Length: 292
Ligand code: FAD
Image 1: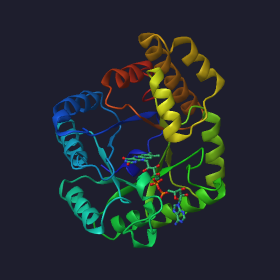
Image 2: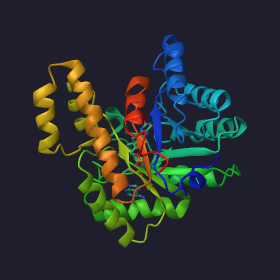
Image 3: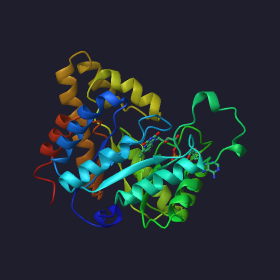
C-alpha cells in the first residue's frame, strides 16, 4: 500500500523506523527485532539504508520480510551520493521487483574524506536527482523525502533549505519526513513556513525516544537538534540510571506525540531503532488515543 494513501486517515497513526544489520553476523538479531516491531501493527515501517555500506543490500531483505510475514506496508530508504548511477538503477530495479511501493529518496551524508572532491564528476549530488531517477524508472513508486525543521547543517539559511525542499516535491516527492526534534514549537514554526512557501504535501514528524544518556550526544551531533531545558533536566536527573532514563525518555517522546496530535497532526514516525520494547511502550502509552 502506498504511504500517500495511509496518510489520508484523520486519526492518529504511528509508524516505526528500523535499520538493517551493520554486519552479516547480526542479520538474524535484527530480523527478529524488526519482526517484533512489525507485530505491533504500525501504520508502516521504514528501513534505513547504510549509505555506501557493504550491508545496504539488507534494507530490501528486511523490508520484504516485514511486508510478507506481517502485511505491514514498508518504506525502503535509498541514498545516492556515494553510489554510481549503475548501482542506484540496480537498487531501484530490485525494489520494484520486490514489490515495495514506497521509497524514501535521500542524498546520504557526504563522507568526510570526499568533502573536497570535484562534485561535478559525481553521478548524484542531491536527493532531487534520485527522486528524478525514481520517477523516470517506470516504477509507480510513492516517494518520500527528508526535511529539516531546524535546517539541514549544510544549508546557509532556512529560506534556501525550503527552496530546495520545494524542488524535491516538484520532482515527485509525495510526502516528507522530518529530522528528529525535541521541541514541538520548532516543528509548528517550520510547517507554517513551508506551507507559506507553497509546499502542500503531508509532513510526518520524526520523533526519537532518547532512552539512554549516551544517545543524547550522538543525536545532537547527528541532527544539530536544540535540546529544550525540560529535556536537559530530565537527562541530568535520570542519565545515570538506565531504567529511569528509559522510562523518562519514552514518556517525553509520548508527550511530544500527544501534543502533535492535539495540534492536528495525525501521522507520527518514531525512530524506534530496532528496540521492540520501546516501540511497544510508546504504543501502549497511546492505546486509548490511537484510532480516535
Ligand atoms: P538533500 O535534499 O540533497 O539536501 C542536502 C543539502 O543540500 C541541504 O542543505 C539542501 O538544502 C542542499 N541542497 C539540496 N538541493 C540542492 C541544490 N539543487 N543546490 C544546492 N543545494 C541543494 N541517511 C542515510 O545514509 N540513510 C538513511 O536511511 C537515512 N534516512 C534518513 C531519514 C530521514 C527522515 C532524514 C531526515 C535523514 C535521513 N538520512 C539518512 C540522513 C540524510 O541522508 C542526511 O541528512 C543528508 O545529509 C541529506 O540528505 P537529503 O536527502 O536531505 O539531501
